Length: 113
Image (tube, rainbow, N blue to C red; front, side):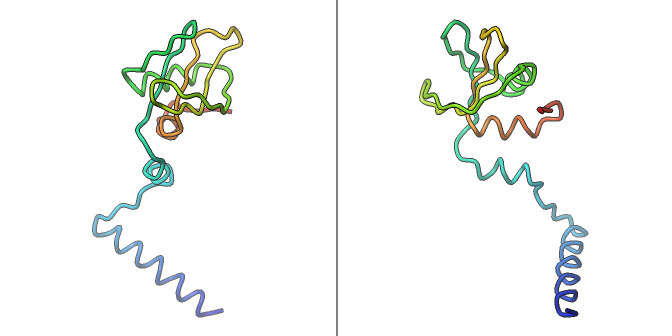
């Protein structure tokens, strides 16, 4: 039992010493964004036309305002889009791939139920 405690204390002391010398460990969200493959892609859909968003942050802001989200699969303009954010009227949908969703989740205004 004491061996486990000793190993745990050594591990914690090592992490604290590394932090003391300026080494910062990535947060869980940063690590998830790093291992998710590809580039973020976010599209606005209006009347079945897809337009690539110029700014991921703006696209995330618009997606957060939508009432519903659903996991889907759509191949559009060379990108697999895995998520759709939509209102009940079905107009002005936001489509994004998994990488864009992970990056949106790290933004301070991203709060979903």
